[in-house]
Length: 431
Ligand SMILES: Cc1ncc(COP(=O)(O)O)c(C=O)c1O
Image (cartoon, rainbow, N blue to C red; front, top):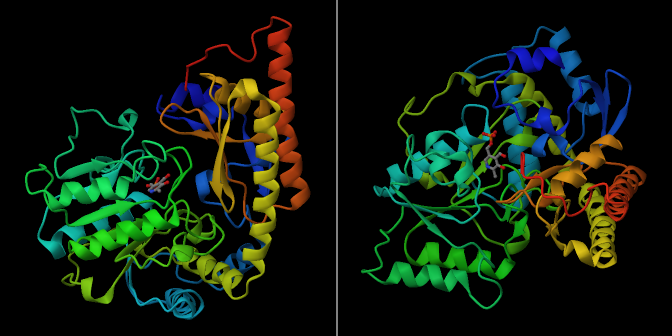
């Protein structure tokens, strides 16, 4: 690992959680230079919903390259882009009766959110945007301004002008209806909150600690948007693409966002980001918002192939089965080890195990890594183990990964009982 320490910036992070050199990966498995195997419950922070080197994608990419297909095309028309647009329209949008224009942005999630915020402000002619506590929307200036966690932001390079934060669902516990709270600020002309152009939200806050908004709350937020002429932006970058059990994370709630941002898994591991916009909001002048890397044709090929997963209910059904396995096992762990004071939250195949003792979640993640499982942390204090396996993981690997979690907890507890540290040690480095 010497070259990484010598050359790479201090800012590197995941290499610290998983300190080995990976060489290859397939499905839900990764292998390092020593041929050690790891089960992947991290999935590239939500990029690999369809697994590493999904054969459907790999085959299509090999054929495309062998035919000298166009690789880069800005926003020129190409066969790969045509096929992508057809698949998006016919396989995803039309079956869901969704009428949206698609805008291609620079290829990362934050590019899509910057675009959505800019468009919303432009269309409404208002500067304020409402975002929620614990929301994470990316780390370029505009997206960072709507991101809650102070760790990512220094007042010296950005302030919160043009953004108001409101409490997410359940922020104060069940007693406080935070949608009503938000409504009060909007109806009171003396609240100090300017009428926003948009409200931006995740339906399940992933980086924020796996906080799941209830269906009722989402519907209430949509009502508020309609009542006050505010645009509703759903950031589906991490929890879209099937992560919660449906292609879009909000499908079950029945809400109809004005703008949807997508990235991460949509390109099957290759960079791609999209903004879906209600047609009447598509008020750009030609070329008014550009970006050199809007034409990643390899990602178009991958994405068009992956949309096929949603032509039937098969994947959605498989996700339900795997959700049951995850939820039941995490509930068992939570009950079996009361000293951890765990909370289990999640939907579909994103689950969080919120572990109360400070630094404990990091210790479990480290122990899991030693035992061949990758799992990362989320939440303001990094107290939440975030379960994000590829959607296509085999059940036996999922179960094995959950076994490793429990074995790691047991090992840490034994260490503590033997006086070797383990559970209870406060290790806030990287926490
Ligand atoms: C919900 C959400 N939005 C936006 C982003 C930013 O995406 P990117 O890192 O590709 O800019 C992330 C990244 O984790 C995310 O989880």
